[in-house]
Length: 290
Image 1: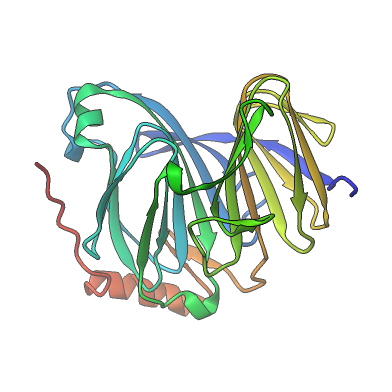
Image 2 (image 1 turned 135 degrees about the vertical axis):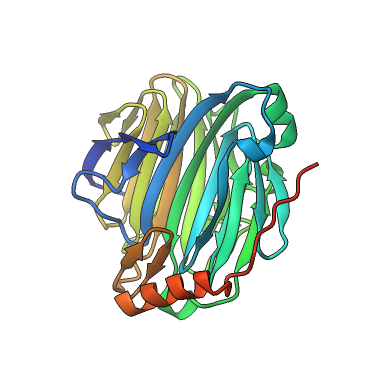
């Protein structure tokens, strides 16, 4: 199989979200989104300790019309939402929120992490939902690292973790409404992995750390690799320990209208989302802390 062509490699842009600093590889450099992927944020910071969980993390906020997806690489996230879910997802885990017609949630460190302090690193993606699913009932899916399907081994120099969709003969624990395959990859120095990719799917690789060679091109930490829409293999060779996220999905080819935490198909639908949130139709989240 031939190698899949690389369209471009772009570096992340540091942004400040109200005092919360993240790296943003998407949107970036004139690329507003890469259907069905809307946004990628990479957060990596150290909690000082001595905090209450209610004084850290992200306060309650709404979403409608897409799926916020979070990979936890270090630390943990305590998710609470207006549908009554309350779940701590730890290192190596992932949470998939199908926001549907509307959900309010918060993302905070666990009580233990807030009090003791420590590293907290995560990737959050916004994955667009098809028009036919934007007003579905919201669903929350936490995934433990042990639930992910795996490929490779220590002796082979790499390990793949499959969280959603299908890769080769295995399926991830999440079956999304938008036919998206999400994996993460850990490579040791000298490790090499060949990934088979499907035609007509948009493909991104984001490298959190390390130095690799991807289809012959050098890629550094905090860089996003955008591939052409064609069938072909992706060869990753680690020059040093590296971590990547693999994002593949069929484009929806539908209009995209966004305003803050809402992603719809028309301006009218955005106005309806704002109205419904103000009227309490997305529920209410009253956080409870020990």
